Image (cartoon, rainbow, N blue to C red; front, side):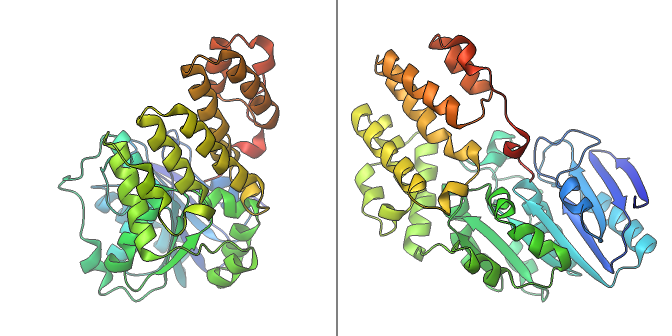
Length: 364
């Protein structure tokens, strides 16, 4: 049965209210690159009975400065559906919006997947969208969290340097939060969806996330020092600094964390040692392929590992090896624009005609 809907636009904030039969109102914040008039996770939540208010910052400005417009949309939704319980929910930029709004309003639980807790730093997605670390619209999460007594769930992919930094920062900044440290990437929402965890969580929002994650062997055993170091070293490399690969390899989690191994490979490449970079990146791929849980990581992350090796082989003048590896990668993964461009440079032609399948498109 189709549910009643109501859409509106206020400045750069698009909103869409879909009324359901449950007593829940879920405020769902869109991620980046969702065009105006569309909403992230809309198809996912369409399969639930919940009342859903979808929000989209069409300027991809991390919902900064939209407090008044967000509150107006939420107030209208509350008046329409009279919920008994509210949930703030989002991934990546949407996770930041959910966290920011949940802490500020203090009237519902929050589920934030991969939120950047410090915007505008080197290597961060928010920086790519020209958000400055000194933006005057940034808020003090720590002071807001002191009076927040609803449930706060934060999900971080510990194979990603920015997520690792977020997990490390959250320990001191948001001490009441449930930090879920995952054997996953920044796109951990997609990963959890593929394992049916997301659908189980959002069906009633009554299940214990920690128990669901443990059931799929997703908890990442990584200590506080390694989390902090991963974030710091990743940021340093992204800023253009030279990073000693040995500083990465000495971390306790290095042997089992493909994200750390990948970072070491990139550090070798920056130092000009492409042979060592290629060898190390292949080890990262082997870690992923040897673990059934990691084989379920989003394809758009997994394919970056062999594609980086393709680029390095090409850079080293080994065009034939690069061509062969790219052909193998195209057989394993759907092609994207970067892969098609690389295939053209290497003269692969019609071999690279595959397009992303529906199952490879992000649902976050």
